[in-house]
Length: 467
Ligand code: 4AD
Image (cartoon, rainbow, N blue to C red; front, side, top):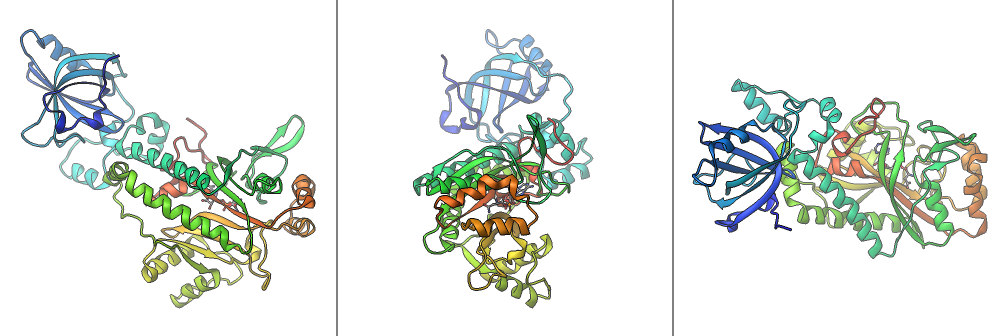
């Protein structure tokens, strides 16, 4: 086959070389009948290609044909790389141009598109400026973006977001494998709710009541009972959320960890600490282009985090809030607003936007959470925050079956529906703990995006199950 060059790699070093590229037509601008500028996009990168009538090589029919191509049509372009006098402002590859010798239309897009990709790729500031100048511009709202997600995905920012998401998942796996964890897959069709609460999708399983797993919680713990020692899972999580918020989806990707604890639940927080510092380092180092592309449309400050992740107890946290004039129930949970506020206070005082808050009140944690041995009003549990919003919750678990059964009952769970889970602890179960991370939340908050729908390829929320 012929050698193809990706648009994103066309660079000044290729001057005078002939390149062959395939991409989508972003814009075509004819200048008279003899010249046309074609901006070609591939994977979020764009290059300006110039079609100029030249005897024997490029006919005026060719220019006419080019200008008839609709936006987003797929084209193959062959041409010589040249260096323009001035940087090309309308392309990501600003230092180069391609002088077209051959242009083939591979497949046409319909003439009218529901989303103009250039408009969809503009930042809020650029939109304001364009509107001030009286430019014709359509502000693309979120529903339209999601209805035509495959078009919306083509913007440089979205290309960046989903590559970052892939890298987060990749680091999660690589890091845990390097620390002796085993990747597992637990069932998503289960007999009863795993987290308690009403946010569960019920279904009929061949005549038996069942539901979609709200988390791999029960089965990842059972894998520890099965002597795997340290396990992780990357998989779908289903929550029948009622409320329509910026951070809740009905289906998201869970990154889950479960491990034996030798002495103290801080061993689990140690894994969070090393894993996330490694992850943030890797994103900053390996995903510069992606972060830049996201920042161009949605400007954000890089995440501030420490080499050793800050740990505060819940009591210390509410003390900080109290000193700042925010009263919270010492045995209750933090609401979204107080979490945000605490995030700000922590950032100001400790210079980090990533921290662990641990020893939560027992009453606000799920039934499987281990209470503190010295004060059972509190628990060996933690949440982890980025920029004041929760990305992880975790804990040491109850591994004593009688106590687990009692806790489930107290929390209003029908113990019959989870009897095989509880029984697992009757055959020799080590102390253990773990945590669950929301993949879409990590990407959203690392990039300071304002809505979780931006970091889910095909989001599922209380009002959306298509496309
Ligand atoms: O806090 P959650 O519900 O905890 C559990 O599922 C436990 N089984 C975890 C554990 O191992 N103890 O969910 C864990 C994480 C949250 O911190 C959040 O990042 C994400 O999953 N999450 C959601 N993400 C998107 N949409 C939703 N509706 C989410 N609910 C939780």
